[in-house]
Image (cartoon, rainbow, N blue to C red; front, top):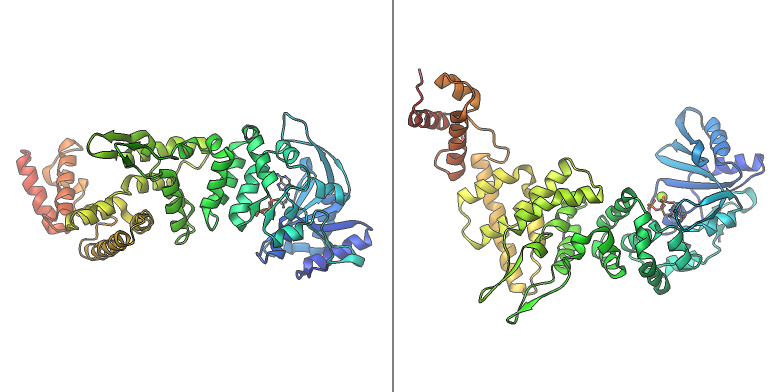
Length: 468
Ligand code: ATP
Ligand code: MG
């Protein structure tokens, strides 16, 4: 079977390897994605011989338009050319020992190199040699598995996963990303070897986990993580959300299932990784706040507050970044009940103003999360809630136009307060500032200078301050 390789760089490489009498192939993810019609910019080239030498020769041919980086320790080189990232490596044979995921490596043939690949769909190669240019080399029936949407390892899966346990995460990630099924024997082997995930660094695990979070239907990946027992090991807080308890015939919903539904619904609306993380975390404190109140039912009192406090420890352990994105997730977790509370009670101006003030520019994301959070099986109820959310959104727009509290800047600031009363920084300044903010949010005064100035004078007098 001949696969057309459009980009001129493949021709160029082919000419070089012909002149130098080498054997060379495109291999792995690029070939897989080409056959799946998923455009990709990462190309892996394997050559029987030195990858670095080939990359250097190609870089000389290309001249200024290419930028080469050489990684001597790994025997690889990367060439950036157009918008492509082309990685060159010599064909290698790997053997593993039990205590490490770093194999011992020796030079090998194309077949050796294909043998060390994780899945049949990732072992596909296309020839760049002149006589066979474009020919697909598929020793493990990867094409068949691509067509039938199967994740399968070329060799015994028990050995494959034990050798490099990151492959368990990769199997589940590909399943979620591509909508493929993991072959039964393979999945059994993942269950078997799950404890070996402990030898993998957290950075590599989170890379794969984030790819699952960003996949079209993330519940596919999380379901597999849960069923394999990996979730318990890498993200126990999430695993703990499983299950339903019953007391006096009252049951609460399964919060794991519910969270996955919210995540999937949100994934239809946004590619924002952190908003998706906010969905994962929004009910994370339900297991620790859960109480049964006799005659009343299940409660999860303050779970939004406790949950937002749990975000940093979870992020730290997973090695997610601890900066602005974490703050954003914390904020959404903390506020996730507010729009629904608005809907259930009365949509008063002051409640809407407060919500706008606290959510700031993240208000639209918060609304998306809250709309996804409605997972009732009762269609009427869902319709009612969504309709009420429309009202909330409308009200948010009206209030924002009128009062501009979304990025609230006090119309009278601390400087002016100190100057007016001829005082330095002290408690009274804070008291007055807060009184002005509260009055604006409550709708007692409007968000403008005149009214805020008046209130400042009044509060100052109450506090026994003198103005000139
Ligand atoms: P993506 O680029 O979408 O993450 P990919 O399959 O291209 O997917 P890379 O990490 O770019 O993943 O790896 C390129 C190729 O290297 C893979 O297709 C596979 O053949 C091989 N590979 C990567 N990681 C492993 C591994 N842990 N074990 C065996 N082979 C691997
Ligand atoms: Mg890749």
